[in-house]
Every structure is written in structure tokens, then in C-alpha cells.
Image 1 (cartoon, helix red, strand yellow):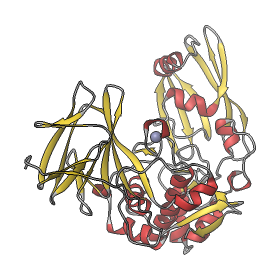
Image 2 (cartoon, protein in one colour):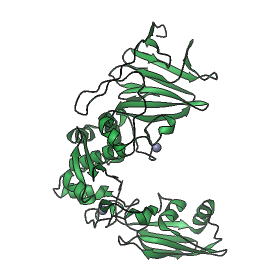
Image 3 (cartoon, protein in one colour):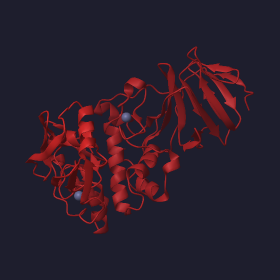
Image 4 (cartoon, protein in one colour):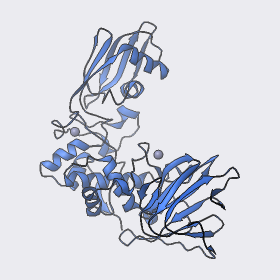
Length: 395
Ligand SMILES: [Zn+2]
Ligand SMILES: [Zn+2]
């Protein structure tokens, strides 16, 4: 398997596939794509670079077909199908067996799944140096990437129209955020920081059908990609981002809408007990040393019904903070939203009761599912949660 024939590539040919055409491969690694909207228009539906394994010193690649490994100098190794363990060497090169390669390196089997650390991916892999380690990047056409995102961002049991809405959102979000990790040589990571991406491993027939049915479709506002934010459950009204992140100049389509479609869904209402000592410890770690907490009160309510601020009164001092920051500081999994019905002290505990799950900005996912069940299609769902945006097909 390790015995290989060495080829030198004399020419680098760049191919760009149109959104509607079959994927065409690029070699060597394409330069990072330009970020301005005008430039994106021409290239955005091409390949995206997704960081799948970051800061590692070794990883495995396997393929059921013969595959090629090409390094920065143009040296190409043709390997038989099988499994290879790559290691990052102290001399700054990537190697396996007796071979040492100059980074960056591409690993490609021309059209079949490639398995990195035993997980299947479409497209091909590239390896970039990052300090004393490497990042493994999956490079693939955007539509193939979205196939690996929708099943990680949606509930697999959702109605097809809700899944289609999610596919459009994930595609739009991707195009609006290309280059999030440009300094590291890739577009997006595969975690919640950008979008959760599970590779081909995560795909299902239902989510792939939703991606295919909305192929190349995005939502725009005034000719630019809309900021297609979403959350699990709005609890009755979606939120203006200015109350969440202090964002200035909220675009019209994100100002918030009433939502009756999520009221019977999971987390439309919730209750959470938290020990006073737990809250105190978390707030202290976030830089708010209140001492023993005597009360937590809501200070001001947004038009959507959420807390603007909370006032924490402790034995050392009182702190007034943005409610969303409070939620993140204490525990965003346990305090599901800042739409509080009540916060009460009960002995050593605080009892939080609230509605919805998430930051509540943009599309309400469980509301989208409710709308789909009520007979609305994905275009109507998107128009409802992002009023004034345009559903467009990128050619
Ligand atoms: Zn990221
Ligand atoms: Zn809702």
C-alpha cells in the first residue's frame, strides 16, 4: 500500500463548477476565495473549506478506492486503497512510513467518500500547518457541505417543508459567513461556533431530499445574503438582536414576529431549579463576585416578552447585567431562554420558569415545524420569520 509511484505535476489547473453543474475537482488547493459580496456572487457556490479536525499531530485516512496525496511542492503519491496514519513531524512536515511531505497536503480519491479518523466525508481533504500541529480540512462543493449540516442543525423527524427551510437557512448562513476562519486557511469550523457539520456520516434521505429540493436557493435582503439566524423555540415571539447582543441597526427582517406555531412544541415552557451556590460560582467565574445571592430580578422586558436585564443582589454587591449574558454566564443549557415567567428563591435554590429555547432571533425552528404541519411551504415559512427577504436561486 505504501509503495507508490511518484509524479510531478507540471501544471495547476483550476476548475470552477457552476451551482447547477456536476462537481468538478480543484487541484492544487484553491486560493482562499474573496469575501466581498460581488466577488462571492461569482464563486460562492463553489467549494467550501471546512475545518474538521483541528490542532492534531496525527490522523488516519482510509479509502475504498485508490487515492492520491499531493504536497505543496507538487509531489504526488498514488496510494492503493486502505488505511494510512499520517503524523506531523517535528521538522514541520507531514509523513507516513518513510515519506515526508511539505504542507499543505491534499488527499483525494476522486469522487468517493474519504474517511478521516474513520468518519466519511464527501469531497477531499487538505492538511494545513497550524503552529506545532495541523488542521485537517474537508474541501467540497457547497451543496454537499449542506447535506452534512442540515441533519446536525435540524430535528430528523421534522416535516419536509421545515427541513427545506432549514436547508435554505444553512446555505444562506454559509455564504454570508465564508471566511470565518480565514486566518487559519478555512471557511468554517464544524462546531456550533459556525455550523455543526457531520460530514457524509450524518446524512439522511430526508435531509438530502430537502437540500436537493432547494438547490442553490438562499434568502437575500437588499441584494445581500440575509443574516439567517435561527433558534429552537421562540416561546411565542422572536427577538430583536439588539436586546440579545446589543446589535445596532437591526435589519427589518430580524425585528421579531409573533409566533403561535411553537406553543405545543418541546421547551415552549420549562422550569429549572439551580442551587444558589452554583449560580454564584458561575457568576464569579464570569467576573461578577456578588457574594451569597439574595435575589435575582428581571429589569425591563423587551417587546417580545424577554428580560432585558437581570439584577442580582448579593451580600457583597448588586450587579445589573444583560439578561442574555446572565444566561450564558450561568448555564445556557439549563436556563433555556431569558423569557422568564418567574424567578423565585426557594431555600438554597432559585427556581426559574420560562418559555422557549435559544436566543430567539430569526427563525423559530419548532415554529417552522408547526407551520409546515399547518400546511405552509418552506417559502412561506421563510417569509414569515424573515419578512421582506427574498428567496432567490443563485445561478
Ligand atoms: Zn467556527
Ligand atoms: Zn416560535
